[in-house]
Image (cartoon, rainbow, N blue to C red; front, side, top):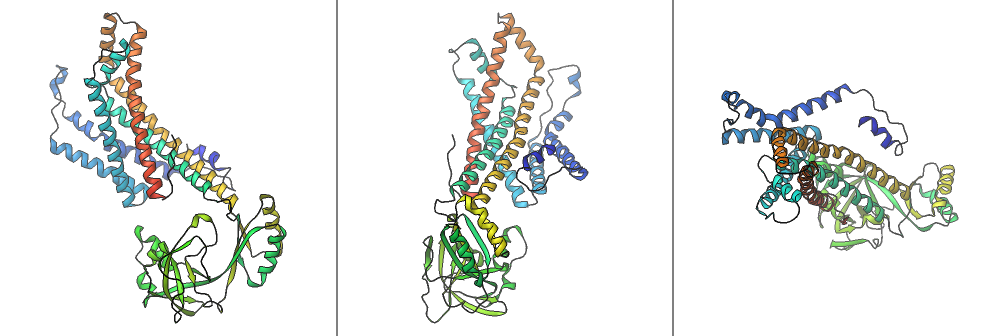
Length: 475
């Protein structure tokens, strides 16, 4: 698998990817495999210790039953072991615990579904269909058939592969749909004030449409309601990432008389206090900052403090790719501050490279970002990542097949007796094979159905509540 990774990435990265000798990674993988095997093997290993010596003489002597306390302890050790392993792999206690609970829930649902199917098959009348169907249904519900383990293993594989596929498809579709027909196709940044006319002439010479530009002032957040930012920044931790970023980042301020059409005021009003300099804050940014309307914030603009009243909170449609800011300051307040410009434009695909070449030659400090090309590259990366996840998830399906094969091998002697009985009753080899084929096809059908439902539920939860994007049915 590692050797195949460079082949997936060579079309996406500007440099060649090579997989070298990684003994630490290999040792970690071996340790992980052995640890997981031991954790899941504790119960059967404990059962082996309970096998009575008399079994040497009497094959029908059953092992001594495991007490409920011992069974509960073994289950707790397994759960803690899985969560610990997931935590070490992900580097996050929260993600490790969530993975552990998710795995338990998925396994429990698959096991419950398999149990319901087995009970239903055991009670359904078998006076329909041919001999193969009737005996295949009976074999599916017989004790010791291994149906439960096979359905859980195969179902988890289907759940993983299908869930990742649907998530990847939803992300790709969202990215492709997020560029409206009237959206800009190029962003230009770091335009100096005296360069804007020349840059604008280059754009118009290329028949650019929807050219828009605003001035930007760089600042640092100094205090909120008189409390210094240093006292507001939370300690480093997984849950503090967004707030730390918002409070410590380099802030970009702009001024607008009227907000873009995709900005909607949800609290307060725009430029409502003639006696105070005001700022409008985007909703999510305001939540991370910890400010509401009426609060006072002070920014440091190259050593000069700038006090602003938070007069409104607004929502922004970032998906439109138009020029938008977290912080919009009242016009006139930033007139004396050092600034630069950013601009957007919609260019024909054939004009993008010539415009980029002219900008590089005449204004080398100006950076042009081609949005169309970036989106296409992101979609390609998502498709490759999705393929890689499905490729690795396929090993879970193979593991399920191996478990099914192990269950068959474990009952080989009983199967031999069953085949002999079938033949004694007059079945041909083809009929015996048909009985077994029906049984295992039904196991695969049940695992496929349960895994598919689980994969759809998983993908829906991640897409709607994790990425907060629209869900698309892909039957």
